[in-house]
Length: 422
Image 1 (tube, rainbow, N blue to C red):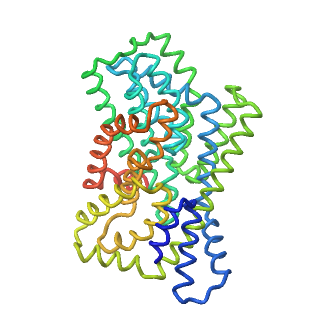
Image 2: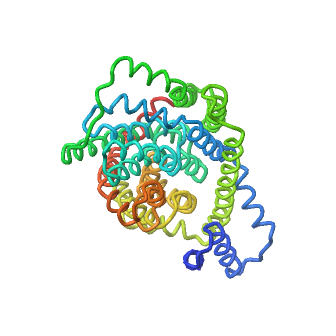
Image 3: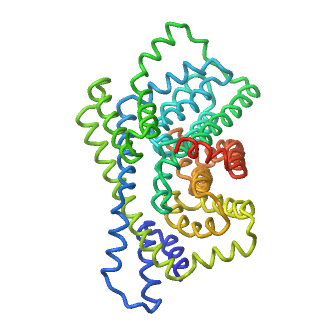
């Protein structure tokens, strides 16, 4: 009844948070339990009283300020200086730029909508086909939620209780692997289609590019270094990121106007309200779900199939790849995270390892039809039809899935760095 109600409400076109709330409320009432409105309010209220969740609006604000202040453009130009002379140079700069930007934002859609617009325009003006530019931009934006900091990792920490710091560190090596895999793909395409490359930069050009971008480039160094050295927590790092972006945009680059600030804060407040309502509704839905005993039954069913952690990981991976095609990543983590936690405990899967695998699975879903959010963003950015965007992006899923397979079967790629640092 709980799942059926959710599906029906979603098919009716209700917002996800409303669908979660109403299906949970209906299942709770029909389950014969005496209903008290205090239960509903307490479950939803307590879900939002979590210190970790403060990182979400702060990282959203930091990304919006950086896009508005021209920081994204400077990062892309610096990446172009570093790798633009390689075959398919701007494709490599696209991917490297996203890796650098991910050290400040932690959101795939923000990367695609902000930095992605700059990348796509630069590539098409330099003679690259729009479809190739779309493929590079869409796939590179997936790096953002894997390489720290990461908003989806914060959400997974909230539902699982796993340390945000360990999850952030766990995403470093997979993020670098994704960057390398996508750059290999760009190199093969550049060789196949004879795509242009930028001239080798002169020493004067390189110095100017570094001078223009040194202040923005300090942001990921300050954030990641501060977290790893223990100067501030991941949540405090989100505040540092916002303050740094604000200071750079207003006092250093002087490109942030009062109107820009109002728009950035307004958009952040709107998106935070949506996410907050979603978190609260998911908490109530998850509580009702646990009362039904479905989570334990699912754990028993999976363990009944096999107690081999590799078999369980393969099954969950296949399931999540399908889920990612239809469900928003935040919603999927909020609903499915608590469902899978008993399974991890039963078969001995490291929760940090699983968290990174789950997030990468769902990020790949952002590039798959019919509801991949990045596909719609790239449709807006490029002006191509949805079908053309899908066709252009499909080949780039292959290197991403290769990385997913690697981190699934070689957990040390994820957990080595957290264990060493922490």
